[in-house]
Image (tube, rainbow, N blue to C red; front, top):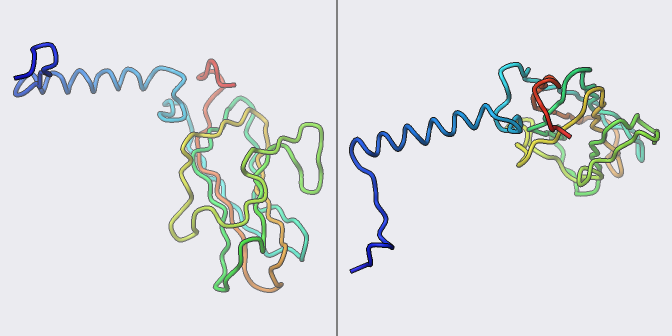
Length: 182
């Protein structure tokens, strides 16, 4: 027999219902507290799913697939990312590279350029145009007036058909809703 100090009490019947209700209430109260907007967007948030496509660029050239400027007065929490290659032909890893960056125009490196760690020179698609984007383990935060871009560099794809696509899924949240966003 186990000592009384190590026994666990399991609620049943009405006690179980009260315990479940208390747990659900605690989760609901915590949901409305900040900083949890990456999990539970506030009521004032706006869902955004910008998408873009481009054709295959010339060999060793870079092309912009998608550009999304975060509006003034909002943060953008990116929760999903899709980088697609849509063609019936196959590719080899390294035939093209995807890059997602912040405040970096095509072909330029201004002082405000911010390469996003681990999102540079991705040698394969992320997600699928048939099954949707990947859901990020943790939302990526972008500040007001940041410009997020998805680009592709053609290394070894032949010309002709095929296209690339990008999808940034997430929430625009007013800056007044988030106290410690950065």
